[in-house]
Image 1 (cartoon, one colour):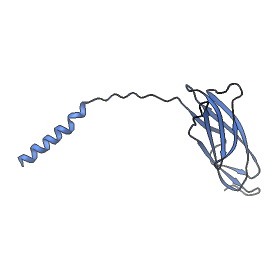
Image 2 (cartoon, one colour; image 1 turned 30 degrees about the vertical axis):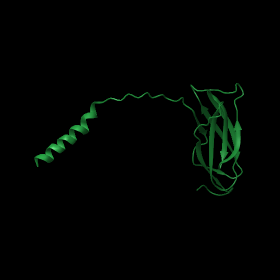
Image 3 (tube, helix red, strand yellow; image 1 turned 45 degrees about the vertical axis):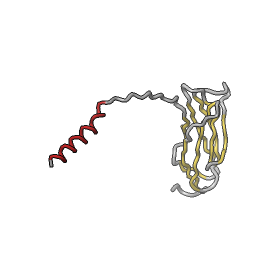
Image 4 (tube, rainbow, N blue to C red; image 1 turned 180 degrees about the horizontal axis):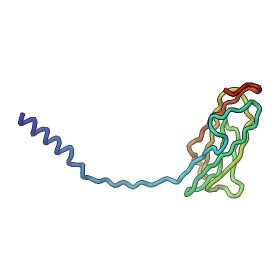
Length: 137
């Protein structure tokens, strides 16, 4: 019994010996680099044949700037936009349009690119296209 107690105390002492160590790590915050849909909202229902106005905002404040934004519909490139005032800008807002085609659920995604070609994480929304004359789901 005494032997078990000594072993347990030894294990406890060894396992807690490193508790007071402080590790310092340098955390470097990467510049904010993103794209998002300002409009339309996610899960919007539209009628087939209607034109959907899409407003995208891409930001790369503190980085090299946004040089291109691409809009994809169901993983196929639909349209792209570039800044007109400079090859790359910190904040780029672009309006695009999509004529709603194909009844059913569609994924619209946007990707922003820096001048060096690096891509942002995609922003994705869903749009449901209903048949003309149908009532909303």
